[in-house]
Length: 263
Length: 70
Image 1: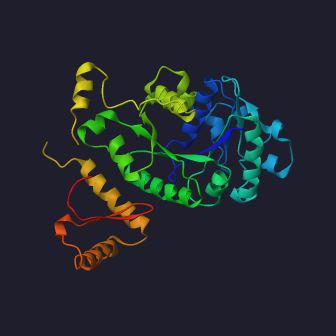
Image 2 (image 1 turned 90 degrees about the vertical axis):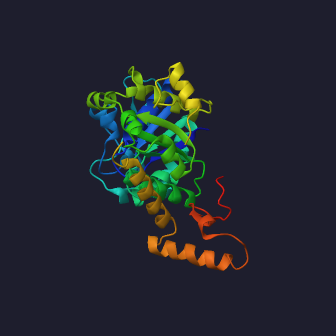
Image 3 (image 1 turned 90 degrees about the horizontal axis):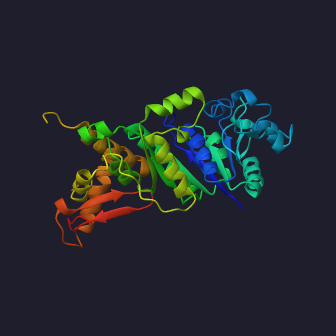
């Protein structure tokens, strides 16, 4: 029996879809059978980020409405074995699917996959309720900005109200130079405010943009952000890996200075 | 460094925002809650106003009264 994980944030534009694509690729790299689902009805994106937009025949709503069988709508990834995408519908809206139907669908997928990763839409309305309906746990994505952290805090409260308690945090797009100058909140600042376990911190990395341009995950590239996503995937599978300190160079001096760092 | 780092401003702003979001009230109402809690508790427990602090988490109201960092 697999696990259903929803990737959510509240605020739009913090990197939910990129995170979903990279976690999907990363888990399949670890030999897991993975399906990623785009639950943003009307604003389909995950297919584009993964470079699979030309392969879509059927979508999530077709499956729910019974227009096709589930297997027919799953698109097999071009690069990663055992990674499948269930795309969203571009012409329907959030009322085309109900939380009950999503729950049933994820239950069915759980039978066959090790991980079912749901990319949630922004907001706290029905699209969000649909995305979390069948989830076993949530990964909340935020950036180190006041507005994104505020929304993340609300989302965590809503997840807890919906009995999703085993949640984890990803802090995305950290600019190390700005953190050092005191112009961006650090990983510790954000984690302290949101007070849920941190599962990963992603440095701001131009290769994420390059990857998105090409429809490729950053995880396959030689990039800091890719390595951060790889570590997140290992943590998802239960491995215990320390969070790397992206603000330090990693040399002996910086390690020492980190040891003696005072808050 | 001459200017106040913008992180300090951000920290203060986000703390005020999540605090009032969590209890669904305005910052002024939050101040009032703190003051009234202090007035009630100080009748029974000895502490100074400087040591008294109310923290609001998503699930708890935490009252610190010793002035010690945890």
